[in-house]
Length: 197
Image (cartoon, rainbow, N blue to C red; front, side, top):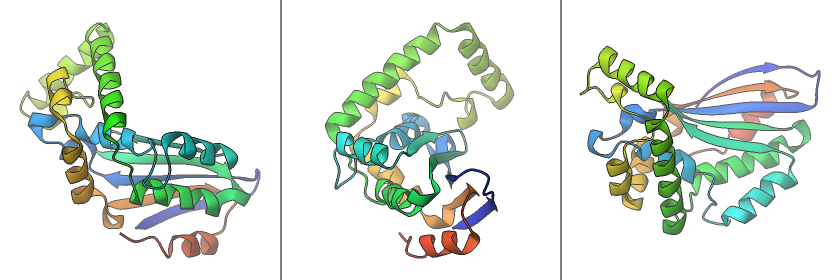
């Protein structure tokens, strides 16, 4: 994994982002929305923690961990106290390497995404942006699709689709880390030495 960083000791915080190449570009055209759901599932617990336990562990560290998908990648954004960097990184590794894959959580997320899609369908700005993308890229290009997918495509997505996307696309070779804060290069390098998949 490539790492880019800037040391800044003005405040005792560390912010980092792990960017995994892919996102919407790697979705199957018949099931657009898989990348978005994979990203959202990442923070819905791990193999060792329920969603509530994971949320509590993050709060105990005074950290924030957000996972989101874009057209070209999936991003894990993290802010933590410098003294809690290693413990927070351990949680991030657990989130990324040991997903929970809970069917009930997926059903709840799918309902939430469908609700978002319906809201977008009533939003003039979202409608204009979607039509603009179709005109620029053409209807057959994956870039013209809505990141969330459609009501039909989201309804068709299964847990196996998410697992297949994860197995095929999540790898340190497809990732980079951007880090800034009260932390040195050697400490970052040492903390990442055991990260493998």
